[in-house]
Image 1 (tube, rainbow, N blue to C red):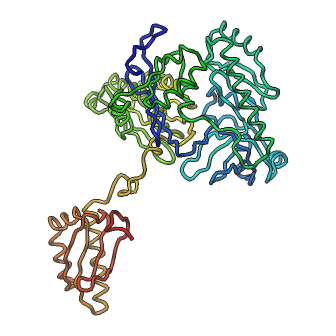
Image 2 (cartoon, rainbow, N blue to C red; image 1 turned 45 degrees about the vertical axis):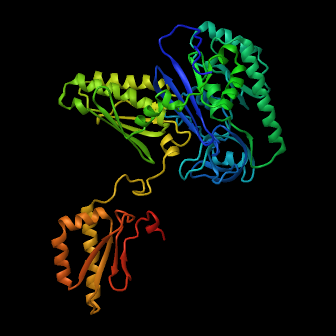
Image 3 (tube, helix red, strand yellow; image 1 turned 90 degrees about the vertical axis):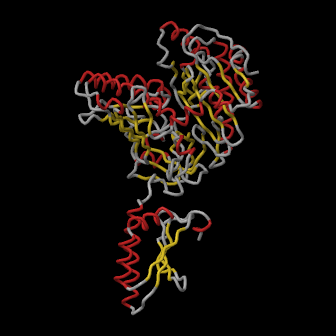
Length: 537
């Protein structure tokens, strides 16, 4: 039960916790270090997650100009695959597992001819692919033939000859021990194997158990592939909680707290495979306050996802997520009066640390442009650049950072696997349609007067005199009455008409209608937006 004292197995200064909030429509996972939110993941069980899953697909068409193919894997949109990803190769697998390569995976572009692909994968042929990037916006999923099946300590790679140990394990003695362990494992024929970083100091029996589990998965996959049902899913990546236990529950995690009895038992069962000491770190939360509020995660999450993030130094960051790229602006804030180099360096150093954290929390990807505060000294620029690269080391997504440009811009790319947290949690505002702005009352007044004049001019040309009633938003009406009354009277006098105004709370700020006051005939309507019952068509 929650509240029991936690057993600590080593002495350390940092406390790392994983908090799981499991609900029927949403599962949220937060990684907290010394009370500070550092990682955040979210998944909706009712929505299909396909990243990491393996499909037996059918080649629909080959695009020589794009040097890519489109594959039917049973989704609404066909999957996209580059030619160089259609023929498995060990360098690509190693890069994917180790996070290597400059440019987030764009460096490995082998020269693969259209004729080679057309001969090996003619239209209508089947191909086994793994989803490397989920559908984002209007784009379909991205897939690769470099299939990797991750376990807790190992990664099995069908169709590969690669056998190795994670480069992140640096100790020569440990590498030698793991090399011997690797030699004893029953690796299937025509399959490669990588020992993951988390296997450091793990006994041979646990690694062998993980190997047996992966062989079971691979055998099941082969059976489904032999059945030849195209398109079909032959391996489904586990849900968020299973992945968290598999990938995040390492020796530096002090405890996992779960707020659902069902999920708590599930996590204990999964963790039990890794030993009793691991299972002892799992606790059930049954408090009256929601678990994210109890651990102060809700407040931190709300602050972290704001457009403006305040820094301790007094500076602040503006974070704008667009479809093409992420634009980040660093500002001095309260340091504005301080123009000396040390103050600027302080804000920039703190900013890059926070930006690295924000990229992880928001799960954004693609191109990122960071407008730093201008630094006159080259050594300061280098210090900020190195600090940013160091901060990005803990990011599980592949990143590539370029040195600070002459314009003070720090450019980088981050691997984009699926939609960002903002995209999955928020929708465009139905009022402003995602712009974050509406036309000012002044702009609306100008447009209303322009259209009134057009209607009155048209009626005058037809030899008619008409009284008009204009329906507007209450805030726009305040502007018309307080500041533009004289202009409207002049307009009325010029065309010998009569104007009356009416407001409605359900009228959108940018909407207005001009009606014949006697017949209620609509003579003009903007019809830009519809809100509330009064605006339904």
